[in-house]
Image 1 (cartoon, helix red, strand yellow):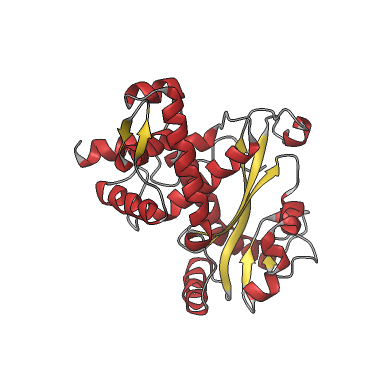
Image 2: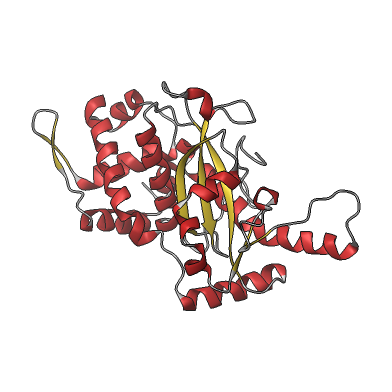
Length: 296
């Protein structure tokens, strides 16, 4: 394929594909024997997985396209998912002190607020109703979902993720249950995060939130809220790009929640590994929509 066609189908460039394949190989993924001894090369596994994540095709359609049985196509996806999950601590990592200073400067230029290193929010990923305690996953918009809580830096890169909370759970409660919250003082130091009104609480002194508009906001309060919104847009855009580029995230049909969690974590990894500084969605040059979950 030429570069444009390759990117349209797999959502990565040729160079990103080579890099991703090598990273997965170093973490233990390899070609092997399926379908009665037919060898499935490593590159074919990676290409199949990228196609699966970038589209919403069924395994019947994918197996036909890659000339494999449905069971082999499914096995390839699961193998790559498991490999991705071992990579999360390495590639979705917290800031170093130097990175904190650089990111703080970027946010200062973006929104005019000092000592900000990231923005936090939750994103709902649509799923089928789970067979056990399914009602817990029904969110306020009327569909079943799990929540991806993320902290992103000034470039929209995921720095901390917490995946799998039921869609019915409020963002504030998810934060309290997350692994980040247990160590927030150590991780944040003197720095702060930007968040929306869901995080207005004395429990979160490390999050700057807008004041609720009760009709009596001063001009200074309104300006402050505008600054916070300008900074928070990076996390909104990150979720939008995630769902626009890796379209599997718009609607996960898997009923097994452990697989759902692995898929979401893998999408976050792809977002980190396969997003270049000049990447821009041609369909949405001003920012990708979040597809159904916005403002939940």
